[in-house]
Image (cartoon, rainbow, N blue to C red; front, top):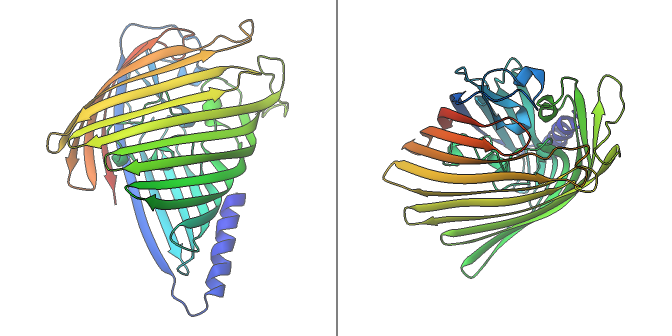
Length: 375
């Protein structure tokens, strides 16, 4: 709510300041219609909350928004519609808002994903304040835009934490140095996620999740067919039970702590070959667990077709084995994309997830298909 008020207030102030100057508006949108179902040998219901533990098999396709497939065909877990508007008041000042509506299983909702003001004094520098995506991953800013990547979904062994957005500010710088292009930013802020959707996967009770004192930086380099990115983030962490208002105890016995995230990605587009890769470390080891997660995907474009093979892995470790059971699994994915011009695509994907630790969500296979469009 604060971020929406910030963006609205800034837009009003800038509109008044611009007097007779015309305000330019740009509108765009995206949509993904995705259907899927799981199959395979039945696995125990041991790890997910009651609402998500049904079915013989289950596959968490969107951790951040609790999108879960079971052994019945469904379009609810991932289908979405996004609308975005940008108002440009002067060559230096603009405001952007984005709303994304999701079906979800029994909990359809529309949320403000972006609501920020941009000040760009020149071609190299920009300052933004308001509500944005936490830039943890290479695809964070356009993770909802299915048309932007070759799979039905970004690999969920890497993508998906309990906080998706934040309220704050970032300063970005971009420039070219010979054959290299560079973009970097520093960012900071906080987020309180009410009725946190990630937590719904594990708790029948409602939870609020707080990430105060977010601070981080990222750097992206591009040359010809190569794009590389690194990122660092840290913040405090607290999970609160909504019924009691009390902070939940972590495996260490503490009720709150500090976590850090490190990540890197290397992407290659060489002739018709494409390579997508990302590695992430999410460190809550001092009071809970530490995660190492990665994926590597290799594909080849045959005209409008792009088949791709992707391997991914998720592995937790803990200093508190008596109070926390680490999760470990890997996924192997075969996907095929067909492009209709420059604005829509159809994809078919097969995922095989093998659980090697606590049964969250258990070994399963998933078949899914999507129609993605931008407009």
